[in-house]
Image (cartoon, rainbow, N blue to C red; front, side):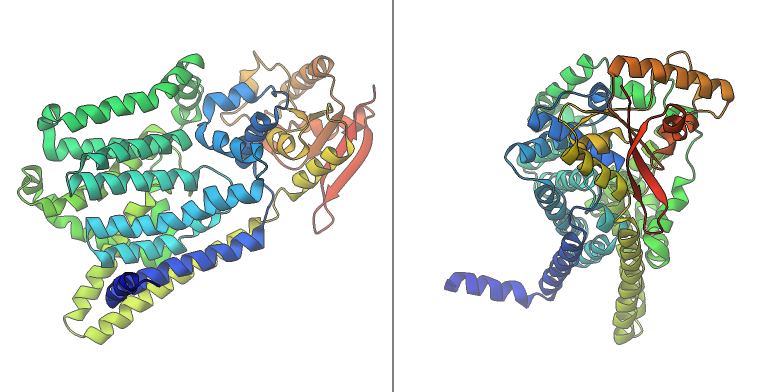
Length: 519
């Protein structure tokens, strides 16, 4: 080892916080590698298959399915394109999991630390990084081939370069990188657009109309337009299907009430210990709130960090509570680093308060809080990962069987169209016909009414649909009940289809059956 490198390492490890950082990243690597090898290629869910099947279609040149236009209208395209490249060069699912989920998932932990250090100090960064490393949602979805982890990775890079380089060091490159990674995040998952929106509102709040005179701002706007131009053309070509799907008259978000239930979800997600310190942490924003005029006039720039974190939280809550009116654990993942900073500030506040009276006791309390909070998240993650690791296994097994024992031009009707398309590599069709004019038979989530006339009419149209597509096989399963009409479960017996294969769960309960149409 070169002497200069040895000297740098000695200096690095003289700082206790650097040692703690190395231990944190080492823990994150070991913890995630353990589950990476344990889970392997666990069965994929619908949303995972939505992305993976289209990636495989693009890579292999399979015939495009009917549902392709629906996918390309509502899903961001960056990750399917990247995953298609993996398939194209012969790298499979394991490589996708390692390079686009595991590595970004670990890097996010470092970025939470690094941004926390820039916003506040190393202590806040380390505590927030630790919470992210054990957070059950992050742990669970690191092993699901979805867009959440890569999108948060890009979002954290955008925030980091914005604050650490542009705001603190006034380097134009920081703003350009903020825009670049913001667009990459948006191209991975559309709500990541809230990140550059937050940065823009922060900039306007601290610099206001002086931004108009900034060449860096105008260059970044031009850079943003150039990066977004492919998507602008794409949205126009799909006749703005994305906005109609999520915010149109028939969208679930428009028909639902304002989602106030999201507010108590956040403390529930991080469990009792870290939720208590989160509430304590909000008291540290008193100076910003009470002295907002000082911040607004930028007389005290030390309040900028608090304002950015608070704005980060508010913007995300406005979107999910009032605009989109729905959220779940993984949708809120981009919000959580800001929540962790607040919780870390709460923990630090408790530590500083007790330290005034007893330094040793303050350290003991700090360690106990971190261990207890981490245990709650780690145990929840372990339980959830083990509970869900074999879900949809029967769909995977059936798809692989169909791939091995049916001709390449076989056509399959199933409720699990995207999973089957991915595993079987056979053209997959939904258990549906032309349902135009029957909108009253479906709820906002697409579930068919049990009303007899709705059931009868949809089965009639299904039979007409079969004459058009001429399928070879029908899969009936307990999965995707929303997309499976009641009549589908008895359809094979009533129409004398030939039983081919079946799959049961560990309790020997029938989960899925494959039938052949008699021609």
